[in-house]
Image 1 (cartoon, rainbow, N blue to C red):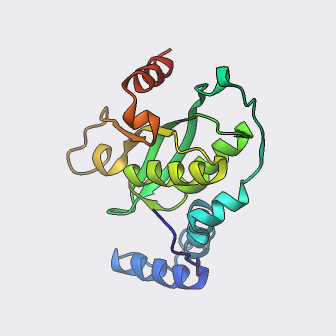
Image 2: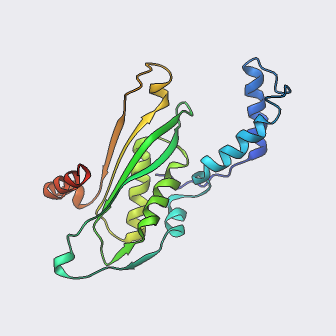
Length: 200
């Protein structure tokens, strides 16, 4: 769970990218590379935006909820948003994790979160040096804090370029991770219902 606040230092990024270009045996002063350190620094500022915030700060950022129906009949109702597209970067190789689809489910407890906020939470949690498993844990933590519900599930499927573009170079390989909290972890029927909905 990421609760350590980081700061993106573009000047340091530019300095080190220039050094990497030199280490690769290229000339950072040649026409095609002159602006590369600055371009990379600006790109990193965008794609690693989530590193500027802790999970608690992201929860505060997207803490917009509405009163939910509070009847006995609705106490087991599930909200599921699936096919949320994200990308991230593997912390082991700085390699792109792509074609990632996220499904987030929760059982409301008095409050419901705006649906677009779920996608924004997933996007922000992914914009860090990450592991796919940790993205799921981060999203689950933030969702539990925002909604007040202990019953949260996050399922992520994605491709990792550290497997598809290097090393074993197994292009079709995909990784699926599940993060189950509360009733999704303890109630077999609830878990079964979740995966039936994911497969619809």
